[in-house]
Image (tube, rainbow, N blue to C red):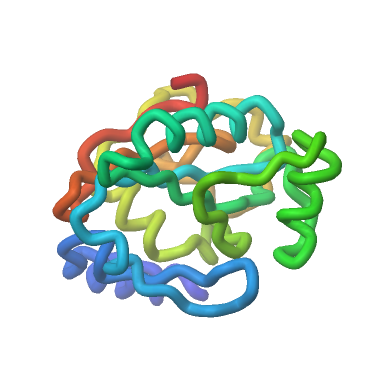
Length: 177
């Protein structure tokens, strides 16, 4: 994608009204419209195979999953190359390696994507354009694997986007929230 086409794409993305205008690919390669989550409060998270965060996401699902809430996980390998597995390996890595001990996510984990740079997933461009960035510090760019680096880029794995039940972005949170 060229810089010129990115500008055109950016103008087009402004036409999106909610996350329901997007779809996501499952780990098995099936396209799923995000409109299937209409009426739910969502927490969209760029995930990597780091054990403690997955347990926290499962805890959120246990506490709020029966209240029209769900977490949606999107694996990304752009931060320190912390998620090198391919889609077909993701659930087994979680179950047997990190976090291991038979761990199974209680929320959907979608196919690996890019959340920053020229090949970033349009859903994440929409989210970043809709909400202010959560951390003014960009971090150690030697651990970033995308280009160009922009001021509203996601800073690291497990940044979170809270989505209202009408599909509009409400608030973004840093990875430590």
